[in-house]
Amino acid sequence: MEVPVAAPERGGDLIGALPDGVLEDIIGFLPAQDAVRTCVLARRWRHLWKSAKALHVVGGDGKFLESVKELREFVEYLLLSRGGAPLDTFELRFGNFGDFNFLGFSDEDLPSLKIWFWYVVTRKARVLRLRLHNDFEGFHALPELGGLPMASKHLTRLELHGVAVYRSFPDFSSCPALQHLEFNKCEFSLVKKISSDSLKYLSITESICGFYDSFRTHICAPNLVSLRLDKVYGCTPVLESMPSLVEAFVRIPENCLDQCGQWHANYWDCDCKSCDHHDNSVDGHDCCVLLKGLSEAKKLALFSCPVMYIFKRDLRCCPMFSKLKSLLLNKYWSEPDDLRALACIFEHSPVLEKLTLQLFLEVPTNVEEMKGSPDPAEVSAAISECLQIVKVKCEVFDEKVLNVLKFLRKLGIRKSLLMPSMFLLFAFTYGKGSK
Image (tube, rainbow, N blue to C red):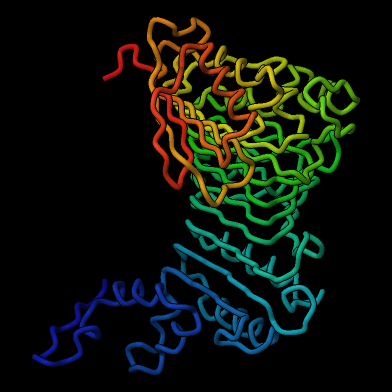
């Protein structure tokens, strides 16, 4: 039983009057180097840092430690001194260390990262962040966190930045509390599946997946609510059924491997081997890589570069987006001239309320604005009866934009008023039942 601390006299040490548990929580907000330094404040503080509920180990870029050797020795001392004290949050954040090799760690040092990582897992941490920042381009020489699958009954949030994940590590079936998972600048090119029944939020950004069209990483997260796939290189991962999905952002980068082999102007009509290939990596169920897994979402943003074929191939067996209410598309979807991709999306989105078309690949510097409303008597049966607003954004009013406006006009969606400004935004409001 903890002995209560007597209230200090007026003008005394107010912080020192707090219970040990509160002080340990406060120390947990400090970088680990500063947390250890609290031991010199007073006799009572000598061992409080060893029971702090959170540890934030920061190294590199001139912060606190001058060399990798000192960092390694400090972390090993820190963990040994804590003994079996439980942890709530653990963050390992390393920057660059001068003219050393990757992150300044030698081959002998890299195993230490694994030991520290697994130590934290055994201490019942709920939040675990491993962030390795570097100035190098590419994914060579990333520290590896491969081996056995993750297993923790307590972990709720895992954030990995700048590591390579191999083999069965991303099998989170033994992490029943895990809800938030982030991969940033990671590599899992040989991982067959990222799976979790408890996961609610998944973000994979600027990372590398499979290297071959016949080998794609599968994402199995049936209870996922939010998904972000932003600039995933290699081969685009396969999304399995996600019936609980609410929102998703997917951007296929220009330099991924899923691109047309011909690179010609008639890309949408191309029947080259890559564009026409029936993807056997989806276990033969159908050839959808992304769209089937996204079909239950209420809010979607789908971006791609011109010669990427994943969305074009998926549209051949396009699922029904029965819950989709808000959709954001980029310039990719305004091709080819007959706008067949956009027409297909309209046809398969029966409850769509808002559509935004960004007729550019990168966000432009200057844009103009135009708003308008449709004639309800001309609205086509090919679009959702729930549709309330369509917005078209572009940088220049050119033939491509005009073609899109003509297409929308045929569907009964037309502009009526031009308002010049420094932004170019075409907004078309569908009024059936609207206020």
